[in-house]
Structures are given as C-alpha cells and as structure tokens.
Image 1 (cartoon, each protein chain N blue to C red):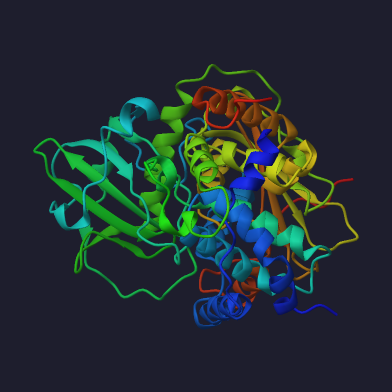
Image 2 (cartoon, rainbow over the protein chains, first blue to last red):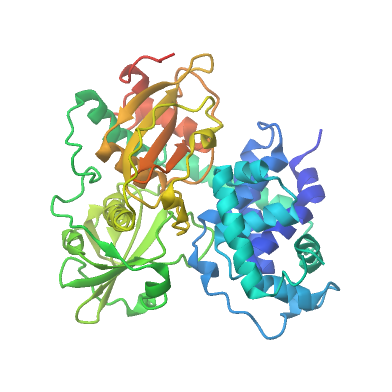
Length: 156
Length: 349
C-alpha cells in the first residue's frame, strides 16, 4: 500500500507545478504545497482519492490566503534567477507570470485547472467548491483579461 | 502555441526536496498537537452553536434587521469603495505606525482588514476593500482589562482604522471569544469574534447596497450528501462581485441541515435573518473544507445553505477536523452546548 511519503514523492512535483502557476513564485509554491499536504495528511487513509483531496485543499488554501498578497505582483523586467537557471523557457515563464498576475485568484485557479490540469468544467467546479456557472463566468472573464494582456493568447 | 502548451512550457522544474513529505507530516502533527492541547472545538463553530441553538429554541427572534446577533443596535449602514477606487488609495500602514491606542476614541474615517504577515497562521476570509463612511460601530470597541486567554484554533485577523486626525489604530484578534488586542498590553472589551462580526457585517451590507433585490424563495432543500454541498449552490447577480470571499453580501435567509447518522436523511431548520447573517460571518472564519466526519449519533454534522438578496446561494459544511472537537464540546464544553439533535425538528423525509 502506498504511504504518504510515496505519494509525495510521486505526485509532489506535479502538485508543485500547479502551485507555481497559482502563486508565480517558487517559495510561495512550496509554502502552498506544504500547507495543503499538512492539512490533507490526517485524511490520507480516509478518502477515496487522496490526490483529489490534496488538490482540492491546494486550491481552497490558495483561495483562502489573503487576496492582496498577489494583488500587487510587480512584473519584473528580467526573470528572477531561480526561474532563469533551470533550463526551461524563461521568457515564456515570465510572460505567464505577468499574464496570470493580472487575474483574480479565482480566475487564476480556473485557468490553471482548465488549461494546465485539463479539467472539465464540472471537475473544476468540484475542485473549487463552486458551481459550474461560476466556473464559466470566471473562465470567460479570465480569457478576456488574458486577451487584453496579449502575453499568452497571441495564437488561438 | 496555445494556452495549454504555454502553461506547460512555462512552469520551471520543481525543487528537489527529499524531505517534503517529512516536513508536511511534521507540520500536520504540530497542528494536531495544538488541537489536543487547547480547548476542544473550534471557537467559531462553538460560537455558531451557542448563538444559534437558543434562538432555535425560543423561535421568537426579531428578524427584521438583518443584523448579526450581538451587534450594537446603532450599527449604521456603511458604504464601501469599489476595489478599483479604494484599495490602492487606502492601504494599511506598518504596524509600528499605528499609534492610536483606543479605537473607540476619535472619528473613524476608514477601516480595512490588513494582510497577513506570514502563512503559517490561519487567517479568516475578509473583504479586500476599505469602508469609508458610517463607521460609528467602531466607537463600541472600547478598551478593557486584558485577561489571559488560551490558545484557540480560531482564525486570525487584523484591522486598521484611520481617524480624522490622521492617526491609525490597529486591532489584532482571533475569531473566538478572546479579547482582541490593540497593542502589546492593551485590549478591547469586545471579543475578537464580535469585532470581526461588526466589520464583516458592515462590509456585507455595503456590498449588498450595490445590488438590486431579486425575489427568490428561501432555500428549502438540503444537499443529498454532507460531502456534496456544492449541489445546492446557485449563482445570482452578486457572483459578479469578485472579492475573494465565499459570500460577500449579507445573508437574507438560510437553511440549517444536520446529520446524526448516515442512514437518516438530514434534519433541517429554517434560519431567520439574524441567524443566517451570523452564520455567514462565522463561516468565513472557519477553514475552508468539506465535512468528512464519520457520521454517528454523537457527532452531528452541519450543512448551512445561505442566500443573499440576489438569490445567490452558498453552502457550507463543518470541517472534518473539528468533528471530534465539536463532540467534545457537546459533552464537556464550558459553554453548556447541547446536542442540537435534541432540539432541532425531527428529520424530514
């Protein structure tokens, strides 16, 4: 039977990536993931799908954190070292950070779930604990805002 | 490259942390130790039950005001600036610059909740905006002798109030029955939960003032399962108010559902204005989560369906981690809480 440690080893990186897209910061992403894992740990052997439980906790924790923490994210002219140094597309990464920073926390969560985790609208609604209609509304507004930013939607 | 591909290409490689699981487990154990060493029960839930149950028993509350239980009678209607015009203009000042000691003295001209300085503490959900008028309720936050208070598993909040003379007061508290602090050695007579409720209620009424009323029936159906509260949610016009809160507008009606055994359908009771608004405020002070309690006759679990004036409905369930604590409160709690299953109506089919 898989242990909690096994689970974190196998799924921690994937969860961290979602956390990074939500927070736009490596340290905050780790902080968010740690908080979600700690909150979920007591339920490890009690829930049917622990990963789904952690994922939901990740998003609800993110939503509950103080909204203004990300409100004044300041786009940087050059990518920070931690982003630039590990071999991926640093310029694109910075574009993503800046574009997502223009969204509200809820809109950001919907975009990450729909386009990064490839969740359906009902799955997104279940994860965020809201209705499908609410997901649609946030999705629509988020895309409109991203189009305005021109950083992510240059091509369909 | 489409949005999906861009997101995937943009995410940096996660740091290699072999002790991630151990750290999370350690943090989790630390949280549990705190639970065991403190007064059992999340104070927010205890407050809900203490406030709610007597009202359900006497069934003669004045539901005409929509004011949360315990708020000052003189609480005025407040107005709020929209995020685009106020949040960048009225910011919290550094704590060291908040020299105004007694919040009840002086003319308050703005009030806002302030950001948390760290992430290890649980912070209550709060509005992101600033209230800029009708702040008379702040005069009720008088200073009092500071009593010791046990650590509780409630949520923390920080409020700053700006005064006409340019000074600023800071109030830091928790959403429980402990006093809120105004400085290292000073505190308000009012509990943290009361101050939090006063401010949240004012914001709720201010937000509600921006929306027209949509005639809708009161919520009348409990969810089919305690773990599926979202199925009773409805998005009304107020959903467009994106302020990062579960339910920013004042609640106008509500339904309390409770389970005390997995084989039975939920029992329910209709809530009045005051009860619904009290629960709306308190539920923002409870950690987000869905109840996954082991159902049983001694551990009733709750789901509350609240509705605002635009017909938006939001459903909350008691967090699983607190079920044992709630049970303990029923048996041994200092508040004399009784099991609501003995009071509320019999389960309805």
